[in-house]
Length: 231
Length: 83
Image 1: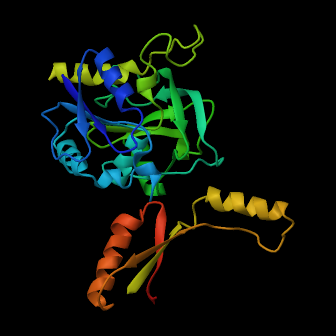
Image 2: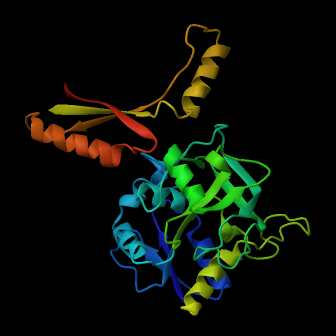
């Protein structure tokens, strides 16, 4: 399986995401924001960072780039798309996911190993988890407060489209402690925490077992691979 | 050259952490006159030619689709500003 990772001006975690794809035994493909070409990949990751310096609104300018025209068209055809942090912001800005992300309630940048609950295993990116499973994924953002109108929140909750929820501590003031959501079909998932930083023992988040031992993030990428193999 | 000004504010019902931080600073400076501060954005679009309905319609479209995100912000003003 070939998974594309798009690099935008100001992307930071594109190489980490490529590495996570490789660790999941898929083939990473570097994609460029200015191209109208997905190079025949089977899935796309929109990585974290500060595209265009967060000018205008986080992810707003990147969401209107050449490659996003192709990503939006592919997503509508069912291609698995994962947006991480700035990538999640791009997915809301491009209307592939509802709602928006605003500055953290506390006003400060937050960086921590974050406990999450996997609320939905019916997406392409979470099929390898068990429902209700608790995982630890690093989180680092300044504008990660998820907001949407009451009707949208009710719909997301009712349709089981809240994919990840913050546990123990809500780091950014997100409504309903929402850390990640999916589209109706379950092929498009966006989340603020960074699964690509929890893929290799020694370099992941701290867990109860040992320092830096967390590898829960790897299973998002494995889930996409296994979903592809099953079809 | 004519300039069209677009003003965008965070939605009234949403918390504005930037405004809250400035309000906190005002209080620390001893000002008790103002109960809250909200911070928005001002865009200045300059072009060559007359300000007519077509240009204003184009700006309105740009303001609603690119300059603001209706989920979190409102366009509160569009007006021509001759410089």
